[in-house]
Amino acid sequence: MTCEPANSLESAKAEAAPPACPACESAAKKPLSGIYRFTCVQCCARLVLSAHPDKRQASAMLAAIARFRESPSRADVLECVRQHLTKPPSVLKKSESD
Image (spheres, rainbow, N blue to C red):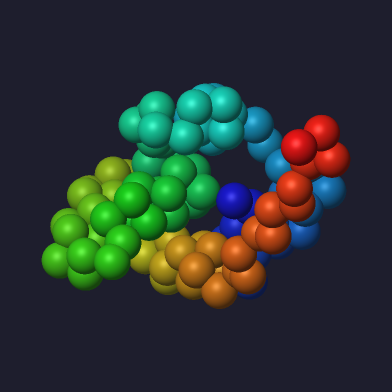
């Protein structure tokens, strides 16, 4: 998941060279790792998405994120969640070895 904060000068820089978040790298290797950094918008979005479709639980996740001083804004997290939810599902190709 690659989401940048909306209307940010840093978002243009992030597109050129996205910073490597150790928690995101861990989640890429092991999706159920349960590791999140509340300073990373992608991690926050993954946390909220882990509660989907339970809106009460997602709201609790957003409240927990908001308690951290350097966390991304609620709007940025929700924009990243929206981007992820509107992506078309991947089409899996059958391997030719079958």
